[in-house]
Image 1 (cartoon, rainbow, N blue to C red):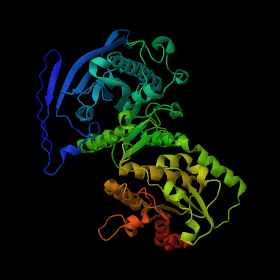
Image 2: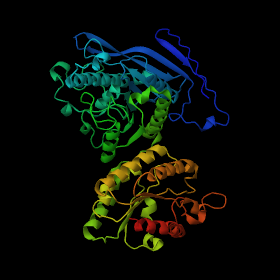
Image 3: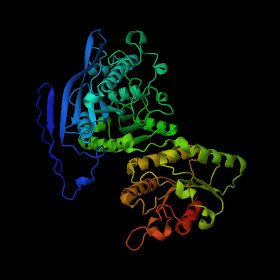
Length: 527
């Protein structure tokens, strides 16, 4: 149970927010982790901090302000920073307040950033006027991203004062504010839309303040915002999380229409990032409208998804190793070479995915089916499969596809939540369906193991979500053999696993083949 008592004391622009947390009995507070969970109750806030100044549309100098929130009595000297950009004209916004408070309680420094939004002196209300042109919106976006870059530079300039880790700066916004974030992160000087009056408004970085510091960010959260041109996002760009309601009639969640030139919405950008191998996420709210109908329960659920995803992007939680999709280029190049030298029969099927497939050396004998195209690579995740699926599947024209990917929920800092596993799986299916609309596709359920038993509940949730989705789609199948590897106590039977307590040994693979073999053949016989 969460009881909130807010006592604001505005003294020298300083206020303290006291939040008392009454935990449900049985919750183990020691299991909470900073940045992932709300571990701070007392929050300090500094309001109306001037970070810059610039000319507005009527030629007047406009001071630019932000509000800062920090976890109180925090001894950490370098903390991730999340800057929030509102899309609602800076009026009282429950989503923005919820987001900033929630992330501050997780141990972040957060800041709500004001920026020049005016097309006329009427401010954001003017943005919705019917007499505003696409060029008006594009120039407003350009000015706003200039201010946002100045705010980022402000925190790099004053990192020690606010206890900010300058290597972990993230930006988030909703609606037009999210579009501002997308421009800050991805728009380059040579991509500035021709509608922008560069002579009047200057360079991309602008002159809003804090020159001499970088305005680069480490990731973006896009809440129901859109881009003018999705091609601003290219190979190697920073990670992007996306969320929106699928019945949004103001800003497109996909690319079905445009809002004053803002055409490419969250779902479209999620797919584009996957095609480039950029870490990304997509949390849809089916049937919800713009701003998730201003429903606080939906918005809170959205924030929980954002928090989980952003936790996976923190460098403090991630080892310094290559996690890019390109680490598997050699494996995929080898598959290309094999494809160029082999003619597959019309009965050939693909088994593709991660190391469980790669290590299945006797797959043909264990399944009793010889025409198998064996395509397991590395310790692949669904992001890796999503990036390479066309190169794996398109050249070989298989009769059916069987997929196993078990590395998205492993008990590590980079774990996807079950919803993200489902959304990545949907994308892989979509890519296959573009070329083979009637191809039978089967998800082989993630199997239990001793090494990853601590996250078995989350794995089961992901399996169930995929199973439910498969049941609604034509020629999409689900095979679950996991129970066959559990002993009488409901725990993984160690005799089926290698010494790593993760992968099957030869006996385990023989059992897997026996458990799924008949189902594989039954799927191949379906019309």
